[in-house]
Length: 309
View 1 (cartoon, one colour):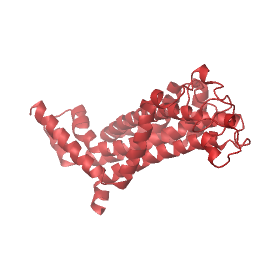
View 2 (cartoon, rainbow, N blue to C red; view 1 turned 120 degrees about the vertical axis):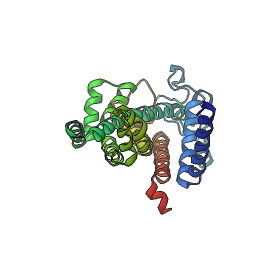
View 3 (cartoon, helix red, strand yellow; view 1 turned 135 degrees about the vertical axis):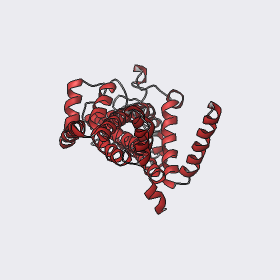
View 4 (cartoon, rainbow, N blue to C red; view 1 turned 90 degrees about the vertical axis):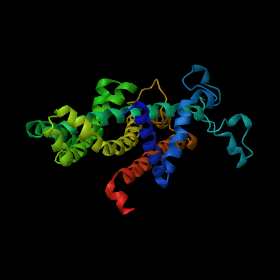
């Protein structure tokens, strides 16, 4: 089969998938919300009026200045006491700019940590499910040990040991999130490897690696896609939690770090709601978007759910 024919078949399958996906309301809403944040992350320098990591952004407004639009409800507030779309933080920096730049770190951690966890979990699940025996026992008992250990305390300990950096946070989330994925993939592999086409491949003399990656992996990929979407949401939440506890990277602005500094400088006691709600709402929306996308993928790729519809 020629390369052009393969590309035509691939594009046809992609169009069919897109047509089905965008008929799902959850999928459409999830993609719409996620597209906004991806756009923010890519064009952050063009969207935000200031670079929050530049020292020149300090003191552009008064500390804890409310948003400018609040004057609509209280015209007695002096003009020099309000600032921008979302006000300022404890250093007089623009909060809107921090929200926009923070989308970069939060999405980066989400995608990278999820890829790490899904990659490790998929490989281990494939190997354990296909070979079985002592290999399966060793890998699954190790996964069980990690599942028994409370996840957040383990991540806190690892993050404290490795140090505060984006790379370390991605590594910590990735290496602690794969066991559940491995078990899901393994259970599917146990079913697929007993099917007739796999037996025919063995009878034809195909090697284990060929069977695993050519015949079994494509049949477990729907589970991989769904788990990837859900794990991105989990990774973003975990990064926000670790940053809120002071284990994030102070050299990079993320929504979790914004909440950490808001708590440190008592924004709640100062009634500086504009410093607390925007990052919290952004975390909620982006997590919901991936949950909606995962739900849509599950409905499309899961034959049982597709039949119910």
